[in-house]
Length: 159
Image (cartoon, rainbow, N blue to C red; front, top):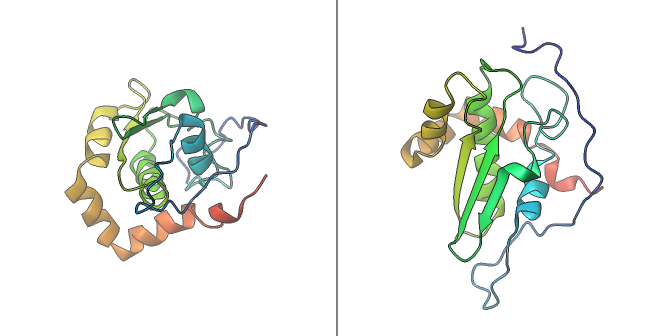
């Protein structure tokens, strides 16, 4: 049974930008990254409970992404559809994996639950930004399959 069997579905934004997925860290020219580019990378992630994307559920939004290219930091906040969403950690992990696989290694990625939107937002955020816990989670083959399912076909999407 889904935590939220009847979620509100939002219309995806119409603004789309082609994004580069394979950054060459050895390239002499440094390519700037912005919040819209990060949003393009995560907007089509599949929700683990519904046949909808995180954008359609309003879980990810451009306004909740901050990038400081000079300091090499990216922060993505996401908003679970309900305050007791049992999938929040999995959603955050999937966002983190997508960004770690797609962005240049120079960027430090932080993923957080939007404060006040989940009963355990601080604990989940701490877990999502603990390198050892993330690594251990990704060593679990069953969990990695679920994460990869959320990312299925994402690189093939061109609106």
